[in-house]
Length: 264
Image (cartoon, rainbow, N blue to C red; front, side):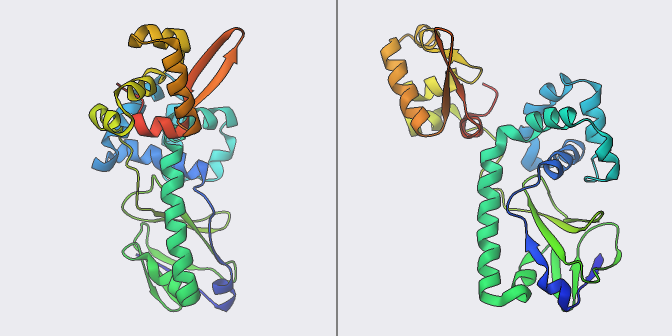
């Protein structure tokens, strides 16, 4: 257990981050690859192949960041971090955002009803508020004296089990949110029941990018039908459409990816 000591200045400087931190999500996703908890098994199967294709630098970054962002991470090329984020986190951006937004709404409710004491009391089972000390279930244990610096509370989709506390360069407590949209794909039958069989087939068909004519030929329907369905899916935020020369290419948005997954 880690005991975090607050004074009155610290209580005035407690904040909840507005979104998940990209570097922390990459780091904690790396940890999930290592400890393989059941809720992330499907996600693990999806990303391992893509991660291997990034080569040695990305694999080294997972090991480097396995315990969370640290000063050593500053020496890692930004393009490597971006590539790793694109494989481990970005395809599930909609699920991450939805879960973090729901958690922030809960924290706002706690703050409005009970002030900062109410906010800090709402982190069970990850942390227990015993004024003026926040007792956090994390390793390593010991004591952390904030001394007027406050504490940033950082919700995380890929944090699992225990919270994580770092004091470099500033005190931060990273805690797991309830994952409202699990990192799994919707089954084909469920997707068809939701969208209809043809529209569900169109959505699955653009997973790797496809043109209107190509989709029509593959699905055994007309180009006009494909255009109509992609228009509805585009309006719903599931598909994006780009024109490459004389060809129109459809692909999944992050929300579409989170709905159908990245494997057949």
